[in-house]
Image (cartoon, rainbow, N blue to C red):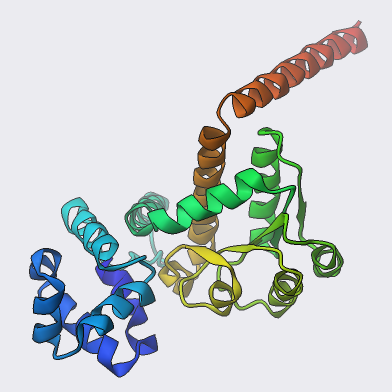
Length: 287
């Protein structure tokens, strides 16, 4: 959480930056301080403290304190160990895995419970769900379609910007668009998300905090963008987004209960039957 707040500093209004500075100087005291004490220490009003908590992706001061406390206890590494050209394969592998683990731990500690609950509710009740992504995020969108189809959710994934724009034009208030982007700045994806939003379709963004996509969306499930500064960062970003999609799928499965369990069992039986037929076909061809 400390690294996330540091990454937000330049985007914060001057008053909220004072709160951030106070927190970064004494994070343990911040966790236990009342809102009035934080306001006095930072030299700002109490509403400014609340606005600051929301600016860094939390629903309020209490959620910020919980996430900060979890981050301090977990001891998530600060910063990344960049892979260097002269690293041995063993060193490169260790750095790559360490960076991924650190990113996933930050993602866990900074995940907004409120945003997650809202997203799961929207996805569970949607008539139709579309997953849009470009490049690496298109791969995540395809994986999301696979996960949600198994839950008997009417869904589709689009990685082509022309298809995204056309499909978004047909979405409405009973549907949900999940827009996936590491940077949250892709003009074509923003265009499609804007079309859906103007049609009254809820837009869930899986993206970087404070990005244009996160601001356009109905709600955002965010992942820390720092890894993208490193040459191999987009790989970590994709893993973060895949993990967040899995979290959403698990949440929807839990919310739908027996209906989701039955759907998972049906799809599993269908796959097992397909595998048996494939093996039989292989034996027949060999004969």
